[in-house]
Length: 368
Ligand code: CU
Ligand code: ZN
Image 1 (tube, rainbow, N blue to C red):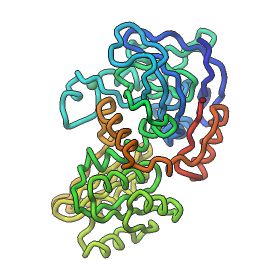
Image 2 (cartoon, rainbow, N blue to C red):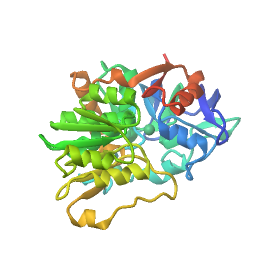
Image 3 (cartoon, rainbow, N blue to C red):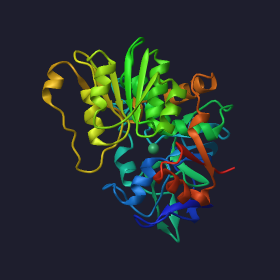
C-alpha cells in the first residue's frame, strides 16, 4: 500500500515527507494505523547524524500509538481494532532476558532491529523497489507501520491515543526509572536532574512510589514549574554548585535516590555525587554522546553509593505499558501537561525546531 511517511534521506537535512510503499505484514507481524506520535530527542539525534549507529534512508519515529488494522500469519496477541502503543523495546516473553525479572532488555529481535530491519532481516518499507529501513523497529512518523506483535502493547481502548503515545518512550522511561529500576521507597528523598519528558516522568514516578521529598534540578524555571505540577516538593536552577546545594538541603548527606535525565556526563557526575553515603542510588537515564565517559571518584562507591543504568525505565513493554496507561486513566498521572504542541505529519521538521529551542515538553503528531 501507499502511505505518507517522513523519510530521513541524508543526515543533517530536514526530513522529507512523501509517499512510500508499505508491504503486507509477514509472519508474526501487524499492520498498525498510527493516530499519534511524539517527537522525541532520539529522532532528532539520529537525524542530525550524531548517532554513530544511525542509517539512512529510514522512516524515523518511535513514540507511536494507533489501531491494529490487519495481522499477518501466526499473530495471536492482538487483533484488528485493538489500540496499541509501539515498543522500540520489545518483550518476546521467551528469551533468557525476558524470563529473568532483572532486565527488560529483550534479545529476540535486537540484531535485526539495530540494523533497521524487521525480524526476518528484510524491510516492509520501500520506494521505487528500493528498501527503506525501519528506525528502531517502529518507523512511526508514518500513517501506517508494520511491526512484530512482540513490539506492541495493547492498551485500554478508552485511553486517548495522543496521550498514550507518550508512554511509548519518554514518559515510561522516566516513570519506570523511579518505579522499576530504582524502586523508590516510601518516605525517601529523591533528586531528579533534568525536567524534560524523562525527568518529569521520574518526578511523577517518585511521587507514585511515595517519596517524601522530590527535588528537581533544571536550567529553566518554566520546566521546574512543570516539575512542581508533577509532584516535585523543591526545585533548583542547576549550576556548578548544584551538588553543594543538594548536600546542604539534606543535612550534608545527599538524596536516597538520584536520577539523571539530561544525557550530559557532567550532570551524571553530579547525580552520583549527590547520592547519599551508605545507600544512595544514582540512576542514569540520559544517553551520552559518542565517546563520552562518566567520571566518578571510586571512594564515592566504596562508601556505599551505587550507580544504575536504565533503558526504557526498566519497563517490560507488553506487561507494564498497559499498567502505566491504566494509572493515567485512573487519574494518577497528569499527562496533559506534557503535550505542548500538536502538529501534522507534514510539520514534523517544525517539531524538531521546537525541540531544538526547548520550546515545550512534547510535540505530538496528530494523524487523525
Ligand atoms: Cu524516544
Ligand atoms: Zn525477549
